[in-house]
Image 1 (cartoon, helix red, strand yellow):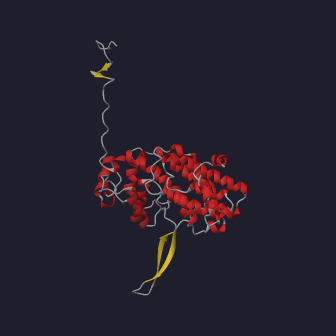
Image 2: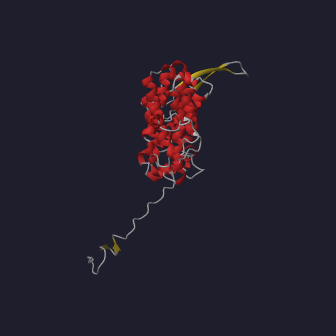
Image 3: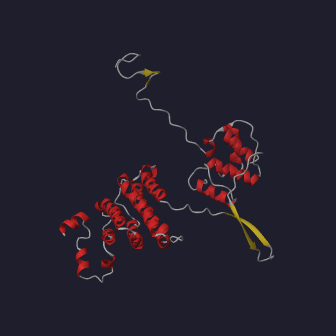
Amino acid sequence: MFSLYGGYGGFTFGGRNWRTAKKPKKKKKEHWFERLTVDQNKQLCKAAKLRYGGNKKDLMDRLLDEPQTSIYGAEEKYVGLNVEQIKAKCRERNLQVSGNKFDLVLRILHCDNDSTPSGATLKRAVTDVVKTTDAATGEVVEKHVPKKRKKAALSASRVYTRVQKKIEAVSQKKYQTHWGSKSHSTEVYELVATILHSDIVESEDGYLAKDSRFALSIAEAACTSLTDHFETMSRKGYDDNGGWSSIDSSLRTIVEAAKPNLSAQEREGTAEWIEALYYEAEPYGLTDETDLMRTVEFIRGDDDEQKSDGGDDTQAKAVDVFKPAAAADAAA
């Protein structure tokens, strides 16, 4: 193409080719305060009871010179404080840990300097008062400790969504690296295993004894969500922490507790979703060391057959245990 300034090639402006010219690199921020606006730096100065007049550079210089604020400015690894460390400082002061880094630092400075603006309320964490007796003086001392949040009640819809979100998190940046992509599926299987084991089998609420049908519905929600979104995972065959083994054993325990309370139709429905889970994972070798299909046979069989001592009839039924139900019926 003919140039505006003579000759052929790309358009040139001021001697530079607009197609090949590189954009200037952004200057690297030297510290965290450079990332903040002028107003945010002023708020930090006010909270630390520093002078807050002047331009942005003046404000940043004051914050960097002041020991109580300079610790938040450094961003180099192993030097500055990360968000989790700043949250720990908030917890030490019984402050809320919600918000971004700026909110957390501002909250700490308001607390340490008693500089909360008039009309505003310092966001403190909900606490319980614990009374202890001082061993030296014998006096009763009151101490405020963060109040433990009550764990949200289990529900099938919440569990289904929880597993779904964990699977869909595969698009996050931390799972895009070689090693990160391997860890995603492991974490998903661990989550499902934790729901089955910790939230149901070992639950302090005693779901298995009180309401085994409810326990089974939670297990169904977790396993069905894994089945429905299984193809979303990128590297499905990685299970480095034995998640499938835990899923297998916990699922058998739940099924054994729930089976006497299920109708024939409900037993068949349970067998079908366990079977679906098995056939999603089987091509990746995840079920090689599990007895999921034996659990399917157990839920479909009669109680009297399962109580047998392992005679000829029981052994005959176990021959085709890893075949689909339809194929087993055809063989029979």
